[in-house]
Length: 462
Image 1 (cartoon, rainbow, N blue to C red):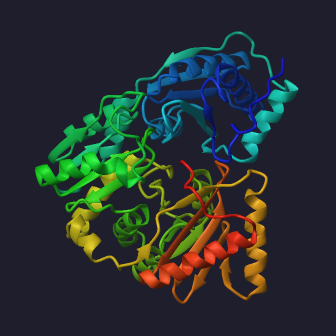
Image 2 (image 1 turned 30 degrees about the vertical axis):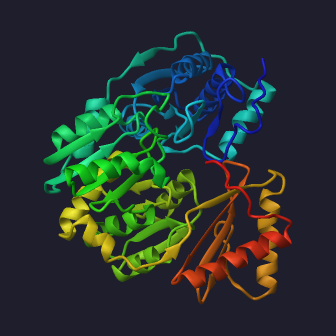
C-alpha cells in the first residue's frame, strides 16, 4: 500500500487543497496512517481529532480516523468547532497529538489539516515526511484494539476562554462569518458582561453571507453596518476556523493585526515588564517602536503560525502576532493562536488601558501603507526571485533585513518582498510617512521585480 499526494497540497504550515481535485479521502487516510506511525514511534498513542463546518469535513474526518486507527492510534473526537478548540483539547486532554480538519480562511471548496504533535507544531519537514512515508508505504499496522471515543469539550473550552475575566462592560458586535467559531461565540457572549450583537453564527460551509477572512476589508461590511446602526463600541470578526481575529473601532475603521498587537502588548508588559514580543515581517514599524516604548523587547520573525509558535517557545515570549490576525498568548494561556481568546483579551486590554478602542486607534501614528499585495509567479521562480532581489540590494548597499524575504529600510519608510509558503505568489507590502514616500517605495519594488522579469500585475487570490 502506497499513496501519492498532489504536490501542491503539502504546504509549509499545513496540508490543504481543493476537495475532489487535489485533496480527498485517500489523502486523509494516508495522513492518518503517517501521523499515527510517527506518533507510535515517538511513544505516543492517542490523537484528538476536530473539524470545521465545511461540507467536506465529515467525509475527511471519517477517512482520517480510519487511517489513524489502522496504524495503531486511539482517537478522541472533539467534533465540530474552531481550530483553537482542538488545540485546547490537545493541550488539556490525555492525548499525544491533535489534528483539525479545516480549510481555514479559504473558499468553501477547499479543505485541509492542521496538526499538533506532542504539544509542538507539526510543519515544514514533518509534513514532507508524511508525503515520503506515503510514497514508500512506510506505515505501521495497529493491533486491532484501537478505540474511537467522543469528548464534548465545547463548554470546557468556553469556560477556559472566560476564566479570570476582568474586562468591564462594552457594547460589541461579533461576526462569525458562518465559520466554525459561531456556536462558541454564541456561548461566550452570554457569559460576558455588556451588550452583544452577533452575526452569522450559524455554521454554513457555503459561507452565504461573505467570505470568512477578516483581513479583507470588504468582508467587514456587515459588521461595520451593525456597529454603526447599534452605536456599538467596536466590532470583532473571525475567520472560517476561528484562529484569526479582525476588529473595527466604533467609527468602523479597521484595527489591523499589528495595531491589535500594540494594544494587547500594553497589559501584557505591565504584568511581565521587559518581555519579548514577536511580530511577523509584515508588521508596521510603528508596532516595533510601540513595544520598545512600553519597555518590551520587539522581535521580528518569519510569517507563519507554526514558525511564530516555535519562536515563542524558544524566546519565552508571552505574546506574539501576525499581520493576518493570528494572535498567540503564552501569558496565562497555552501559546497557540486563538481568535476567541484574543477577543476576550482585547476587551480586557481596552478596559485596563482605560481608553475606547476608537481613541486608541486615533492615537496610533499616521502611516501610509499598502495592503498586502500578492501576485502570481511560477512556483519554480518564487524563491529564486527573492534571492536575486537580495543579491542586488546588498550589492547596492541597501539596509536589508533577511528574516523572511527582503525587508528594506529607507528614509521614506520600508518595503517588503517575500515568497508565500502556501501559494505560488510573491507578497509585497510598503509603509511610508507620506503618499509621495509610498510612491517612491512602490517604484523600488517594481524596479526590483522588473529586473527579475516580473511585472506587478493582477492581484492573486488569497
